[in-house]
Image: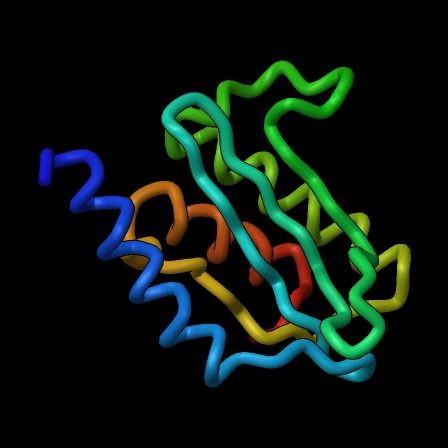
Length: 119
């Protein structure tokens, strides 16, 4: 098995282990993030109804930040917190989606916390 496929398989195993424990309810939805090499995405999801309540990414129109670095992740995290506050969401469950909690993932989470979200 080549190196990249092995990394993907490991992340998917971690992801399933996390998803067994984390559930987004209407009163405390799940904040799920995904990072690729160039961009970062965040969604606030109600798992019972299967709906995305709020989302933000580095690919949104009018966004000048690069999602492939820590500064871009901070901007997207703070923008998601603003949108969630407008939608009346303050408490969430954090789903790191199998990624290690450092670098861009940590910057995104810290910016969302500073924006008023409570994990």
